[in-house]
Length: 113
Image 1 (cartoon, rainbow, N blue to C red):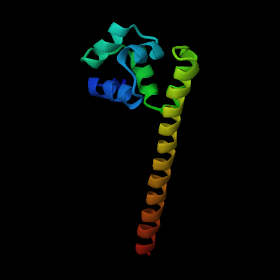
Image 2 (image 1 turned 90 degrees about the vertical axis):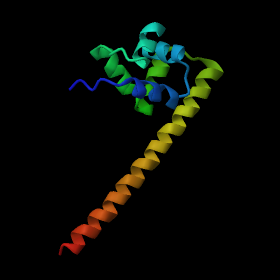
Image 3 (image 1 turned 60 degrees about the vertical axis):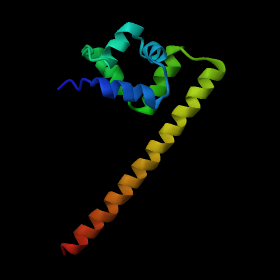
Image 4 (image 1 turned 120 degrees about the vertical axis):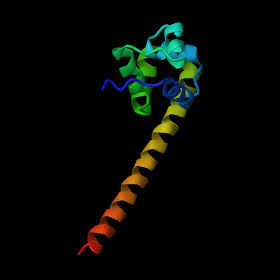
């Protein structure tokens, strides 16, 4: 109902961006102890759960990084490049899935005729 993330999901999101827990906590606006508690099994409140869920999307995470002010200069450039690669991978995977669905939908609708 509330789409609360499980600890393994919280960790996977952070690892996707190659961030230490302290930086992930800062980007999301959490205290580091609060964030670490989510990685070890504490259930996040609804608003924190929503932020974590938003962070799954590289486009939205990039915005969170930018507005957080946690990174600047070369560090911001480095994390932005990594996020841009993830955005591009998501775009390519989305295209592959859509194309695959299109092919199979066409095949099955033609064979039903």
